[in-house]
Length: 220
Image 1 (cartoon, rainbow, N blue to C red):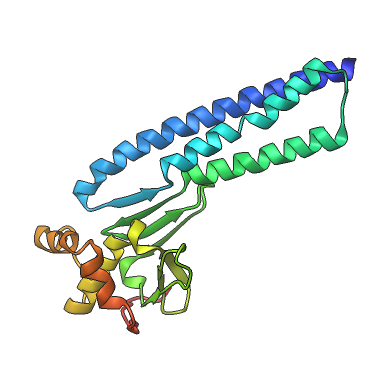
Image 2 (image 1 turned 90 degrees about the vertical axis):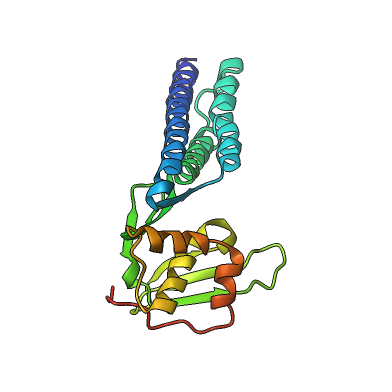
């Protein structure tokens, strides 16, 4: 009986802490999205996970701790290694995925490309580190085409579907190809030109079926 009370208390604590973490992360996510819109005027383009993904995970996340709390509350099963340990590990896994989804972002700015995987693991590359741009056409109609950006030494800077967050970087790449230098996004005229190219017709035809390399000014 005492062990069952202990498990009720433990799962109750897990549920409360998880709910606190989840609510806090959602609030921070929404605050950041509002800030991202203001940064657009400064030629800083930030892309985050879709809100629908956050909602799905937010619904699924509390279910396991709540279920285990109710199981121990309604039945004196004590500590069950398979159920309790398995449920705890599954909860940790979902929390890891939730943190990654809610906290990850890509940032394209005049300084370069920054990416955070949601676990405080950030990578940054200046624009002039981009050396090679490759367009890959998907053979599956349900999977979008992708564009990858690599350094001179072959390190992958970024890879994403152009219809989602790639247009700013693609537009800057077109500017680099046509002007033999990267755009100065602090220059209103050059920034306006890049913004005008942030669409499919102004970017994809300029890189599709072409070998684009030799763009880098630094090696990383």
